[in-house]
Image 1 (cartoon, rainbow, N blue to C red):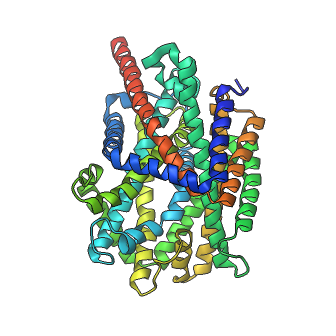
Image 2 (tube, rainbow, N blue to C red):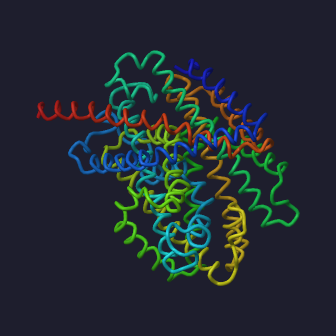
Image 3 (cartoon, rainbow, N blue to C red):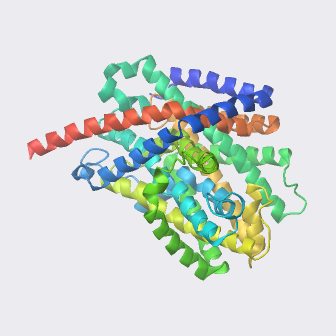
Length: 498
């Protein structure tokens, strides 16, 4: 079970070709991938809006369905992790570093730089900025992850199948998923995971570099050498964690992440515009639910300017979450054994959504309040925005130090989780991949990030990942159909026995 399969070798070759192309011909690679992404978002934006909405409905149905009482595992199985640790682990893998990266920057952009429909800097833009940020990081994002994780956990722990994406499709295609078609499905998942985490390593190094430059005068703000050193240090740390196993390294790191995140959140609420934060959170929550259906299907077919905004933000996010869903879904499935479907969906869909809303209300409102006070943040790089906001608050240095620590631990956890998932997917779904396989994937991810930082091709590889999300979206639809077919048959059998 621990030996690598053909998926490993095929994925390695494909990743090497993509990285080589991006490193040797970055401008041409950027042009080709950019054109493909533009075509997909313009021509298939309606498709992304529809399928993600279907995923939300799918998850909500099973949340309230009588079938929700069925366990992701045998009836006697108990959860491996406490509820708090479980939430910390899935949250750290799901979008932890993204919250720090975009916590202040996205609401600020929707308010002052590129609002969805309102005038920049207006009160309506303020309200709109929070509503759309909630939308992009809320139930829809977590439903995408939940679809993959739910299907995998059910087939792996309830039905005894290997922990592979291809295994979830056997109720539809039978043993054909054991041959070349199954390999193809798993290769797409491995490619998306490896490339996605490599780009995150690169962007994470850039933000840590930006934070250190704000904290210490002697460190340049955009230094390739500094970023490579950061990646090297993080690689050593996450490989040590990975070597210790999922029940030690990832578990302890995830709990640390949540402690640091809660501490930073409380400090920002206290030191920032506290009353305004709570008022905006409450108002934005109501506005989010009031406009949820409209935002979910908003395609702006006869307004080119609004459509361009939707392509650049909403469609981009939906494709990005889909591209990350193999990695995050597999990891969430792995740590969710023994929970009922209803408990699983409550924990994966609703709790992280609520935490994300509080986070963006605090950081976004504070950033917009600083901008409105006369400090122009709009000319800064995305990775600098958070630290510039902290610079205007009491105890700004302390906030920045905690933020850099949090980014670092989220950074390590994501890479650690990814090496585990990649090892699992290329070892026939082994729940305990060999350390040599995990080490290989860890070094490969870091090498990809360094090469593309050096060649300037990181953004293009991110675009390539968005393109890879398109074929995987069809696999997700098949996973939903397969899960529904298998679960309903089992539920009918349970009812007959009663």
